[in-house]
Image 1 (cartoon, one colour):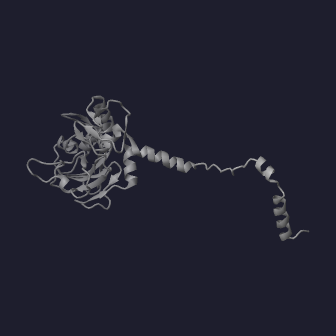
Image 2 (cartoon, one colour):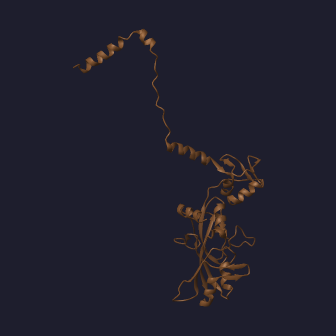
Image 3 (cartoon, helix red, strand yellow):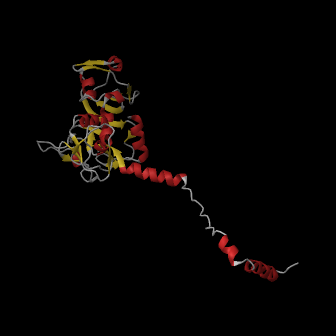
Length: 289
């Protein structure tokens, strides 16, 4: 048996015995480079970055806080939207991150979408500003975010409870439109006991000056103690709708508190304070809407 050194010597001698002519005749073969295949994750990441760079024009407008996507399509078709100084009427048009988008001559900025939940106290009106310089709900969330946010729906000056603020025009539109039936629960405190007859009448629906209204549910909060505390679930967004239902039967509402908005509650949110929605709550609202 050949030892290790002898084996190496024979190998080199055989290599040296090859003539120069034979070496010249043999084509020099370059080592084949192994083609690296891009992983599916890498392809997905590239496609994701590309998609993030481009966004549909109606979505860009909605994310700027102007309106919902459906309304943005109407504005685009009407020719009031420009991209890089060119009027765009094509629905489905996509814009890049460095494109300049204008709406009715005003530059739009794609803002980060934010969602703020306030437990509104009494004495504040739901308005962006007030000509009489009364306190507004905007005073309570003035330092919440740098983005410009708007209240979704409204609560009366003396009504307390949950009020959502956002710059997401699409969510705001869906949260307030009755067709999406976003349910709200109110706790109503009456000056006098609600009779069983009036309770049944309200449950079956009430004809008001602006149409028929029927609560989704109604119940006594403390049936064994008093009939002054009533829980009402309703999805209508009509002005002062809960107060008007009870006033129709001659009752005076001394306290009205919105305790639930969609799936949002007042848990761990003191009166007059606000907090950001969690990712799970945001997803829940999008599903509900």
